Structures are given as C-alpha cells and as structure tokens.
Image (cartoon, rainbow, N blue to C red; front, side):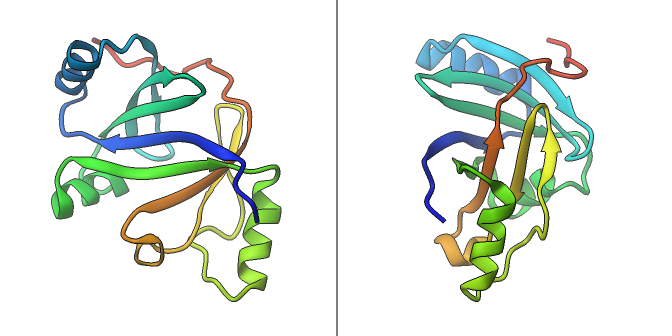
Amino acid sequence: MQAQSIDHICIAVKDLNQARRQYEGILGLTLHGLYEAPSESIRVARYYLGQVALELMEPMNDACEVARFLRSKGEGVFLISYRVPDVQAGLDELRAKGYTTIDQAPRKLMGNRYAFLTPPKDTCGVLSEIVDGGFDGSYGNPTTD
C-alpha cells in the first residue's frame, strides 16, 4: 500500500469551543465546518491548511476512543489520516503482509470510506487511518458555537 498524501490530522480536545478560539486566534485559521459523527461519538471543527485538513475532536461521551485517549494521554494529536486509492485494498494488502489491522472493512462517514490501520504501538504511538473518497462537506448535524 502506498499512501498518496496526508488527508487530515486530528487533535483530541476536551473543550471544542475553547480549542477553536485558541487555534483560530493563534494560527488565524478559518473554520470550514462543524459536524457531529454519532458513529464515533465526536464533535468536530474542521479547518484546511492547503490540501490538508485539521480536525479538532471533542468526545460526546466518556466511552468513545477520543475520551479514552484524553484520559490516558491528555490533549494532543490523536491520529493522522492518509489518502489511498482504495481503503479495502489497503487493508487487504496489510493483512497479506502479516500486519494486524484494527478494522477489517472500511467505515463510512460524509462521503469517505476510512479504516484504522495497525495498533498505534506499530506506528510510534500514533493512530493511523487511511481514507478514500471525497469529504462531502454536508456536516451532518452541526454543533453549536
């Protein structure tokens, strides 16, 4: 599998509105959109820096992956997502090479197919994700400011 580019970087945050103020104030970022992803139990603020998206992710409950990350590591980089031509083919190729993948099949969200790759310990402590498709920008159920 050959990653084509970085698609987005996700940062786990405790308070989405506070994190937005900091990132917009310090870096001058312009909000592209807000959305909720109930399947992942997260609220997200999405920004673009060139072709790469930056997502600030706040957990919607204490049981989701982002909440567990915050409890164990605190706020910070949660995952890096890499664009590939075909998510399923990427998963199949990794398993054929003997790697254990977190996901066996792609998940779907907002026009994208995505999957979590190997456990973070295999990629220097960073959760890695692959994605194909185009982010449709519909933003589902927007969060409030």
